[in-house]
Length: 298
Image (cartoon, rainbow, N blue to C red; front, side, top):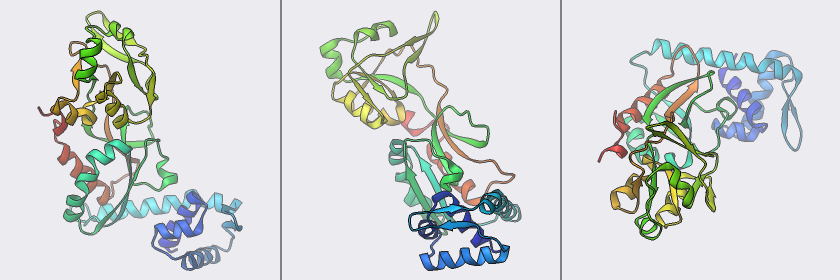
């Protein structure tokens, strides 16, 4: 059975579009259709329904899908096994990353990474939404979070220290909070999805439900609003470090560290062995960030 046909079928199942699935694998629409026809002929069953609007799996196609995925995973594991330590990373590696972190801390290293691994191509998709790795066909997802999904394997790329920031302009105009409780008297810029800020205090963990007129769903945008003096905000150092170095932002409440179990993770579907291209990507970026990430070096 032709593995390229199986790869195409799995991508069609995810995208519901033969042309799109084919283009992801470098195939023209006529060639993609021909490959699916050959796969159906070899199996003796119809795998997909074709309409003018979209493609859907037949009942037989739905039953065949997990077996196709299992075959492809087994092939990847076999290739990794015979090439352990010497197999050259090659092909296309599909990576999903948060928009801000990807722009600031992945994109600047891509040129050097591809020069080091000339047989690899990068397909980077940036989104702040949590993607379905299997449906999206991703090899790796970079996540800035605490991890709960036991179906994925995770490697920590770097820590994610978070602090409370304000602009000098805001402090001069409104004063500086000296305790977490005093935040209730201030304008706070909130990242959508984080409802409260938790602090370490002499009396234990204290959670403050921050209040303010501005809520934003992007880390760089809350940082920029904070620089503009719109309020205080909770910000990752990897996002704020340049503004801190320039004096555009200052850290407040230094005596009350933020409680957080988030980090920067590379996650990938669990399998017996790690594909060389995935290993190469993870090892490279761990090396880029260092044991103490460069954005935390003062």
